Figure 1: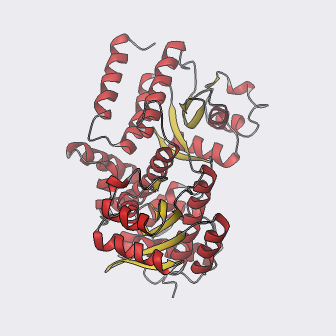
Figure 2: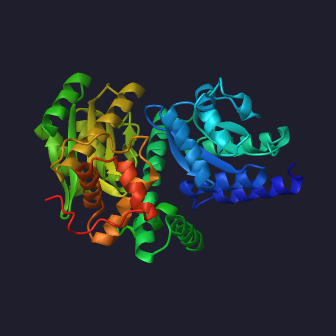
Figure 3: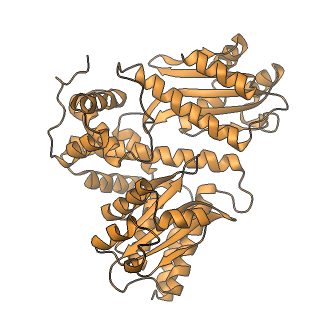
Length: 231
Length: 211
């Protein structure tokens, strides 16, 4: 159950993020953190489709979320793929009974301690550009109200990526998605460089870069480019 | 080889022309131009300091213009120069892998011709292929598989950054060395990177020079 105040808070926070200087890459990470925070999810991942319609990992609330997404992409099966392909939510409450549906993913997720998964499409009209995926163990699966809130957040993220409300031109979609997928690679490179330079972990490096970006009101990928010494 | 690939692409898609510009320390250099007029337009962009090629490189995103006349205000001088030569649409794709920015592929269409979505997808594929080939110029090993495949783990890019700092080489060089080490040991690039990032394996040292 999410309180009305919390919902209002979240949307104000998101609205603030959407005004200039808007940092899309940071926002997508923030979205996974928010979804984890608002629900009982133990791990949240976000995937986006590339120009060929192949899903690529974009962001996660923790390593477990990333691992779950990468596993599905590699195995070519799983809730996030189903969700993306059908552009409809996939709400699987019991992974214990999902072996027929996902013969490789379900047992793997179960043995890692996950019991439920809720995948929300990031959609534009009737087509999805990606998916926001929540995983959890125990009885914390989102109720209908929480699901509506998460779907609304996913829809906002889609709009943010496409930047146009009703009539996104196909080329804007392509430009934006290519840019954001490349930004992710750049950020990973910077995480490694900063980790090596400062003798910290890549995750700590990432946290530092986000802090700097916020404090100095700069985009995350600008901070990352600076870490790498490129302009 | 780059030349042949681009000419084939022009012939196959019925394009007005293709240009590939590469980043060098002294500025962008046209390395492929399927006609002299293409080279002229790439140089015009550089001299004027405006145009889709430079914008794609700077923004790290493709710049897709189906109708140059309609978008003339973006780069007035370039648009006029291009349209005067019979160009109606321009598509510029950065050749990049994260912060490794190799150059730009620019496709030109004659007035009245534009790329449909399938052709844009094919162009992105071409851009990735050209990028990989250009990165291979630094590397004697067999041509790269697609470097940014969905199956490459984050650790590969993180390891790239780590090697860059540890060895004091460029990001592109770091990737070459990682690939060389993986190839020499007969292990998957993902696994090598994982080992380095997790500290299960010591950092590559300068002695692991592929030369």
